[in-house]
Length: 226
Image (tube, rainbow, N blue to C red; front, side, top):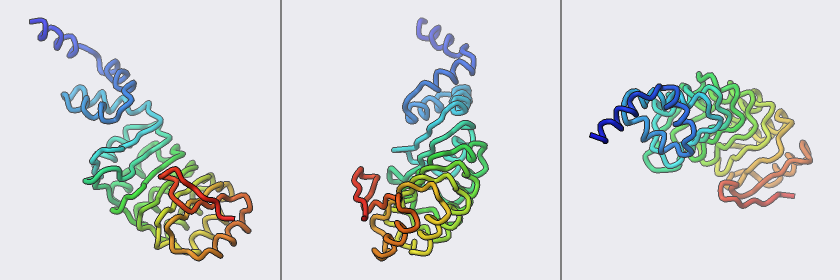
């Protein structure tokens, strides 16, 4: 009897109170579990996303539809991490296209697409062309080419740091375009790339204060190329 009364009390909670409670949850996993309880809790979980500044899908097996739905609900989002952090993550260009239509896209200052093997230049270009407030970008471990860097150079004037670790299809041409146009760029990670060393010397001539890191910042290790 007591259990039934407790459940009834929970059911009577208004959605805005539930949403505020879910907003306080530090773990996305907990929020995902809560959203699966019932339809009312699912709506409250989505509503709670509106106030979030950071969203990370670490350790989650996300797909295009679920990722886009959650990002589109987070109107005030500033930092987005959709890195491939576990096997089974299935985010592709289609997901990036859908995310690009979110209201928060122009407010994002940080995006991580680390290790997203299912994305190409098409999805990245569409995303960064609308992310004009972007300051930090991680596209390491992807198969992007110079085309993505040209788009970043043309649409992200506030970019400060970029991780290109193991982006082996990027060439000297793309790096030069990036450094030439992103005048606020402070750090670039080029570990694992197939670019000649003299290219980095040229980049430092263009931007003497630029820090060129040769190993993955993702591993918290870095070496500046002098």
